[in-house]
Image (cartoon, rainbow, N blue to C red; front, side, top):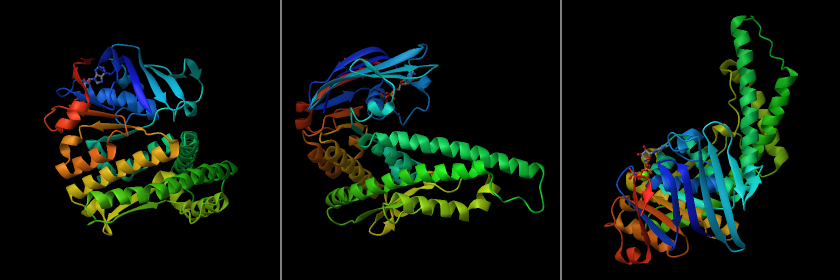
Length: 378
Ligand SMILES: Nc1ncnc2c1ncn2[C@@H]1O[C@H](COP(=O)(O)OP(=O)(O)OP(=O)(O)O)[C@@H](O)[C@H]1O
Ligand SMILES: [Mg+2]
């Protein structure tokens, strides 16, 4: 797929900016705080409807404006698509595809695919389990858009169930009884059932995507490390799923809820479910999170990103965009070359940098170079 044009209106520090992409590689060059990452963020939103930097739409809109817009034309094998996202400082987003307003997010997701790689991605290895869950979820949303819906349902049930547990705990604290009533109100049993139903769907999909991603990442890791390192990726679900059978995963879920019933009531929150999943990376059998060197962790993240590209390409049947935010300069020449070799001309790549001198001459020649200054592109 090829992003032909991107039009930003009151988005971040861009008041009005049209960009036409003319080469497989585009280098966005500029000083700090000029708007390079903001542009990549717009593409990330088109791909996932999420930004890894902003939690509120208000922050994405140009300061002082009440609404912002991202418009794009995308070329895919089966034709051209026009995408648009309208963001409002108060109120809901509006999405449209080929000028038709969409009611559901899942009809928008999966039109444009992108893999982002930034220096923040080291958090994938070093950060809290939540970073890894978010990463996995963002990947799943792109290859199976319906997953966005499943995850949303799970999160809603989880929120409601937590509210109920909190209420039970508050009542218990206000009027402690020597033998608290451990019989479950029907409402909680219904939440248990729903948590198990949606939770097991989340778990099974996460398990399947790791199964597919792990060998790809392992192969890349082996090649980048010159066959000296073996990467293992293990999905550690909170509720284990030994097989992919929906009924048995749900059953395991309900059993674990039963086991942790008292703990949940004491804590006043749900402790069972995929919101407590973990993904473990091991290099030569040791945990990369605690024992990996910086270089090993970088290699690992690079291998993961390359694996994501390949997996999306396999599933979607077209090559996704690659967004490289400030990472090339951080990689040593060997890793840079591995990355450049892997990309070649297969993926449309948008690269941000503050300096052009870290780039290969051949690369510069074949790239479109755009300079970014104070929310304007020359
Ligand atoms: N909603 C907004 N309205 C106006 N300006 C904004 C908004 N959000 C962010 N900015 C501005 O955008 C700039 C940051 O842009 P961006 O993150 O794209 O920088 P960058 O060019 O990638 O820089 P670096 O090289 O440091 O990564 C900051 O100056 C910030 O104040
Ligand atoms: Mg930046």
